[in-house]
Amino acid sequence: MTISSSLNAGVMGLNANATRLATISDNISNSATPGFKRSYTDFSSLVLQQRSAAYSAGGVRVQTFKDIAALGSLITTGNSTDLAIDGRGLLPVTDGTGVNSLAADRRLMMVPTGSFTPDKNGNLRTESGLFLMGWPADSTGTVGAVSRNSGINLEPVNVGASQFTAEPTTRVNLGINLPAEATEPGSSGDPFSLPIEYFDNLGRSHTLSLNFTPTLGATSASNQWTVEIFDSAGDPTTSIGGLNLEYDDSVANGGRLLTGASTGGASYNATTGLVTVTLPHGDVDIFIGRPGQDEGMSQLAAPFSPTNVTKDGSPIGDLQSIEVDEQGFVQAIYDTGFRRTLYQIPVADVPNMNGLRALNGQAYSISADSGDLYLWDADSGPAGAVSGFSIMESTTDIASELTDLIETQRAYSSNAKIVQTVDEMLQETTNLKR
Image (tube, rainbow, N blue to C red):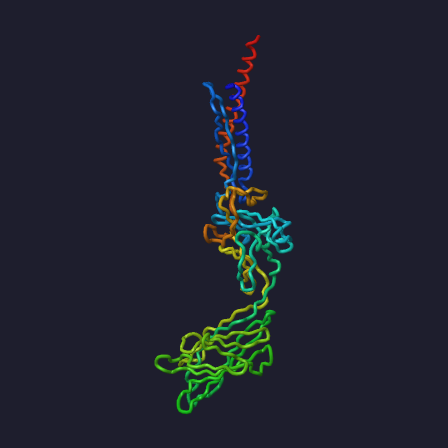
């Protein structure tokens, strides 16, 4: 009956607006919750097939969803591990049970932002108990081949094991000028010494000494030098290798290396310009230059000048801070100035962000509606950059919610009035028998 359909439509209107009120209450209560995504209600009409001239009201349907794809404003904080995605995508996290679980048994979730701090074991986690996940990097800071369609290669980000570090020296670059006058007849023939500090695999400091001795020409400059290499980690008086160098004094290539030959325990490669010497902690490459090229060592009419001597490696360093760059690389910074890449945090994305299943703590998980997971490098493809020292604000707009609250209240009262009116009409119909 038409009057019955009016009653049903009014009741459905009450239920629909009650649902909308619930979403508004949720939005307002979480207006200050970082990373909260606003919930929406979508009303759609329900039409009944009209079989007679009398009209039957169908009512209204209501559906709710979270606008997970919406982006909140980023606010700056003082914590380097406060992270947010500046653009599309989410950060991978797991819960407390997943920290010590196998990768196949670990629960993978995602959050748009999080204030991560180390727990007692050094794992970065939020106060709500969500642990940040990333791909571990090797000793060179490189992340190898990883699965991008699953979290099988993700691990909880742990910074506790990196409290101290030492990086052994593996390469030395020599930018030195040898004085051309030193090889002329009548010169003193005194050697020139260059001490170079290096670090072994335990972070201990040692000295590599290079002695450059000129060969005096009989009637003109010989342009030849003998180099001996000494290591303080062993017998500092015994050479561990050497070189015989000759420099070009022609118009076209004056001052450049002409030939080089290694002696003793050293090995010179003219193609790369590297001299390899074996030290107690392993081989070290010393770049002196390639024949005919400007890089490395030179012989010009200028004083002995070690103008650009560099090396890699570092002594024992104490962890000072953790930072995350825009590409998602987690870097440990030590008091020696050394930086070490520990993890790379990918950005999780799905075809339908609003199809993700909402969980506690502003976390989300994959569902049938969201589509398959893909892990992007941050700031590549559709994925946004990882922003450190940042927290994403709630997407709730208080002014808009209060406006919706007024509309919902009026709509609820109107539907209640329909129910009241139908009740009065039915009462009037009942009174016809009297």
